[in-house]
Amino acid sequence: MAKIGVRVEATEENTQQRDFSNLPNGDYQLEISASEIKEKNENTRDHSINLSVTIDVLAPEELKGRKIFSNYNLQHPNSQVQEIGQRQFACLLRSLGMQDAPEDSDELHFISFFARIGMGKDSKEKNADGSPKYAARNELKKYFYPDEGNLPEPKVDAGPVAANDNRRAPAASNDNRQPPQADAKPAARRPWGNK
Image (cartoon, rainbow, N blue to C red; front, side, top):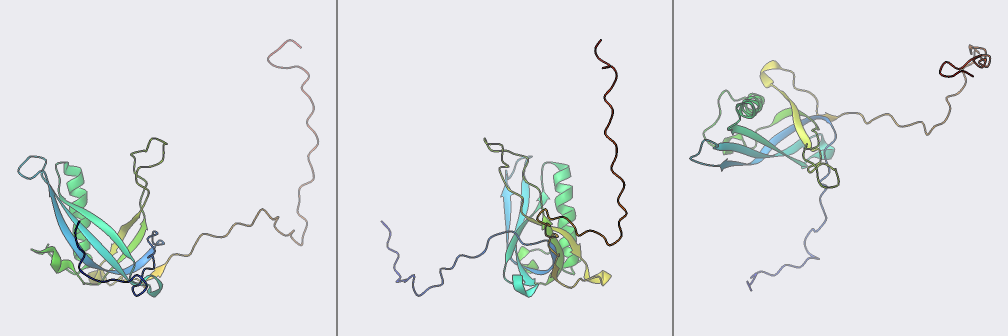
């Protein structure tokens, strides 16, 4: 058994659960607070390099401090996956005001940038019950570039319009209703039979 070696009282610490739900769609001011390079299958033809980043929300104020996570496939055995990853990484660099990739991923940290966040798709892999193996999560859908001068005001998209609870709309003041149609006459003969 291992000794912890410190005294911690749960009543003295903040043990409130944080909100881990997805962020609403919208335009956000963000910054990268952590990054990690992950390599797989080193010294093989399937060698891949992935940059994982933790991104903190700076604005809008009501969501400040929330986090999302993103991955960039910088090198991958599948050329299409690598191309998409490098294109996304180039967009991130441009939104940070960088021309070239830095030597160290720490150089990406704590530089403010703007991006549109939206929902991705559920994974194609399914569990035994048919539900997606991984539920949809937030993704960076669009980056805004300071060199274009199109930086948006951070804001969350308006929510969907509320349902009308199946109430009928109020009648219009003028009555332009069509007269009721007459009942259809029964067919003299059925097309599929002799009777």
